[in-house]
Length: 309
Image (tube, rainbow, N blue to C red; front, side, top):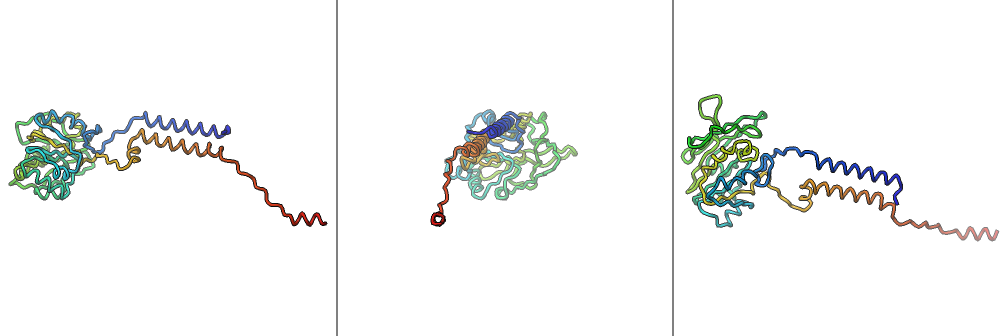
């Protein structure tokens, strides 16, 4: 049995641990402003709203999520002709294998839509396009516009929170059509290009430099019309929706990593470890087997001498 002091320490430790757990569970979670763009993330820069509204944006097209590497999908699958592959992320880098398959896909008459601040030098070199980004400490207001007068764009709010101005600094004028630009508030001339179409084989690339336009934050903030205008250039019977090249894609490599990635499971794990330590510290110490006292052997020579004397 535990003595009074041990019981008191155990109660204090247990109550303190319970208070910490309750405090962590009930306190408001800080807003996660990290870019994710996955279709399941509801954080500001997640893509939940975008995917939920995809059916209304592409009314005549079937939408299929692609959760594997685009290289594997395009190489191993029989994809639909007159289809479009959509990539949206804060930054993208297509390696050589992915680029080769994507170029073949477009060359056969399909469309690849990319909205990102970067696409990597391999595919950029293939299309002869290059972009630049202003990573300013101070937030910059962006007013993206379209060259087409048929698109509604008068009431589109400015982009400011969490955005960086990315624009094209080099294009192949023989194969590229300018679709959108940033309005220049300080002059009458046009601003930097941020949306272009690049013809390639029988198909086309649609390259867009403002991925934040498709985030939960801006779609719910009144900028949905701008996103719809950008996507109006896609005319396809089938939409392949990339879920692989995402900043927020979760990779679970082990059960422990999954447990530590979920707040409730993490706290349950720590409580369990704490409980086991308390058990070992107090309970185990009190119930260990009594150590038998072994008496030293008597010196019979001394006893014999005393008897003779």
